[in-house]
Length: 283
Image (cartoon, rainbow, N blue to C red; front, side):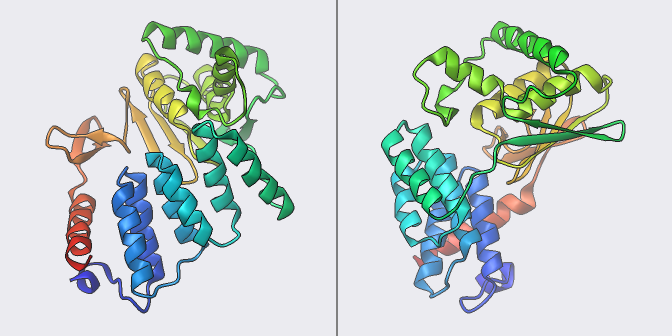
């Protein structure tokens, strides 16, 4: 059944296993992603760097720091693995471990790329990095960021400062750090320049943090804008205060936007259900 449904055979098709691990992790099913990863190892498949990043990404989504550290011990020297582990330890406030991971990265010549978001407007590509002050419209962008902050307060948004990956003790400093994430700058620019009714399309080189994800959902509702963001993991379609990656229907199934309605992405969900049954049977 596993071979017929998914083309996954113990002696080949590592990419299929890796893709399903990524899918499970992205959709909040970290325990099942880890279970499938362990099954891979048992049948003798050798995971590559991309597989390990998928497993660590699943752990990151679920906050499974200890499990991530055990997986990391098996992983190759890939920068993505180090970045995921560093970010997870930072989110958990384990700064001594963050220092050790970052020191190991420096010894191996690894350097984490700064967050960067881009948007094309009227044929020109605009690039924003975290805390960027170089854009020619920075005064207008800063003013729009202040407006966004006040409107978020009106809907009682509380910043998730655990997402700050720098050692800052003051909560206000942490909130200011989040407000200067590259996608916030790109959204502020877009609200100024992209005409109402047109979708806002943003590309980001890193994962969108949980706080920016929540904020973008809220902004899509506050300003009545459709925001499409592509990070280094997946597409996010923000509309009416919801995102395509985390809409849960009344029956507990994942739902996705289609025009102005919600529809069931049943094919993917049912494949996951079948896969989980297979894992259970063969464990």
